[in-house]
Image (cartoon, rainbow, N blue to C red; front, side, top):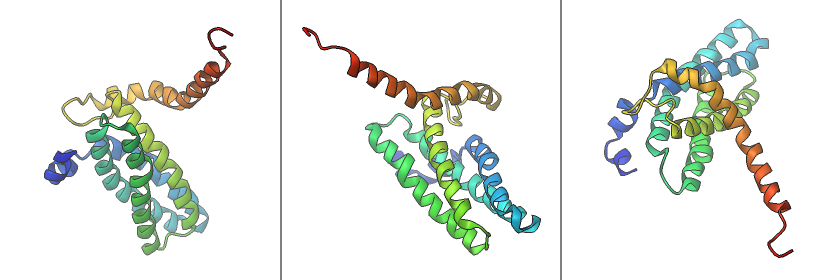
Length: 178
């Protein structure tokens, strides 16, 4: 974590995560395109372009940070940073940028964007802990990462269900001596 602060240019610019940036544009630009579509193609195109540029820059930096702290402990602190603090900060700037650009239907776009931000942040952290979507020394090819995504998405989505089922199983197991 100290290297992030001592070498911010290297940490956030040189290690900018282009893989996460590309995926973020694919996920986030359509949100604003769709939520502004009824206001005309010009508003929709502008909103999508603004989001594409913003999310590419921010997601690349955000993912560089995620990659740097992916194995840090305690995980609860990392989770709070990645799933609450950073999405909130990014969303404020995203909302302000769209406000300045006069994006119509902004509340809907920001609301959907918040959900996508939290889920994608969790997924990036999850996948990076498993060696996918990295751009640093341990990076694999983007093609290899894309091939791994369907299985990772399935595991990521099923993780909460598995957790609940295991917890229920523990509750249902009789104590020794009963």
